[in-house]
Image (cartoon, rainbow, N blue to C red; front, side, top):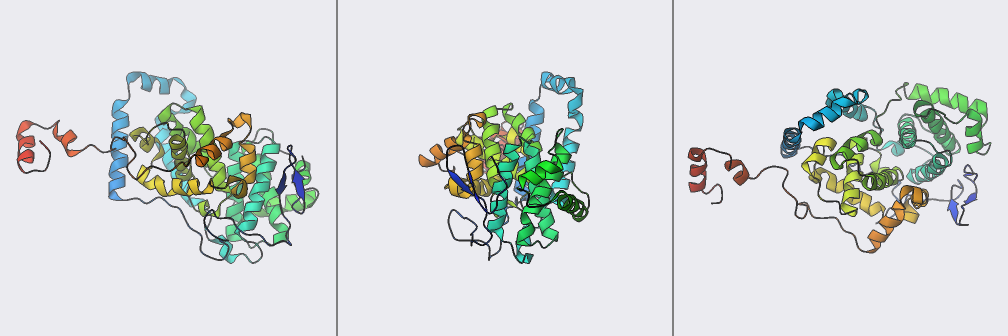
Length: 378
């Protein structure tokens, strides 16, 4: 399978054709509900933080930590390589890094020749290349971050956009993989469109533009932590990975922190699999409440309305048995009219205790005046 032709069609196993890129042909950024998005401001999905949300997250932390048994503590301490005692500090540092290394969500406003639709085509090609070379999921997300950060600080011509993508996946593979593709394999990826010297020169230039800051914490690290809340359920995590890759194709997620996207993907997967509510344990391990995640999940849902148009390569990849045919499952659920629950999840326990719950643990002399004043039910 030759994946590099931006100027041709490449044929899949089932004789279907995936359009890769013809620069002379006008393209549009796809939106489920609307027209092209290349002329206006990009929507930026960023979690809102209010005092109420801070209290809810703090309450979830207290609840989870109070429920931990001695056996749980011993299990964590057993594998010393997991350094569980430093977990909170490690993820706090990663949350700082993810903000520091976020690309500019509006970088396309400064680009002269390229537009968001062309980024989507580049991502479609990269997903196919990544899948063809059996690279790690972390490599793909790291590659996307390098591309968006590079384009945030450098104006690139249309003819060099594929070189940016090929260089980014080359650098990301060096950072993440044990056995990464050679520079000659990168030349093969681009069908000889660029030489070895051009790719090596582009690599040096990209590293300098990124200021050698390559350790961006991608969504996979955060997804693994959140998965602890439901005992690392494989179905949920596989479906969440599908939703994570769907977000790569859409510019509206460019300015969103990876921890936020990982939490949204996991939450969406749980809802679609009917695995239950977003529990205090999920709030604690993700750092996000359902109120914060709902706008993000809603946009992910919108992206799944027409998957073969919005994210063809991702859909094809996840229709394989290896990925539990996640994309076909989502397509079937969407066909059955799947909708998100309202702000309060059905049959969900509130993350914060009610006044009655709190009062039940109060001494009588404090509880009784509250009843008389009508502040709580009898």
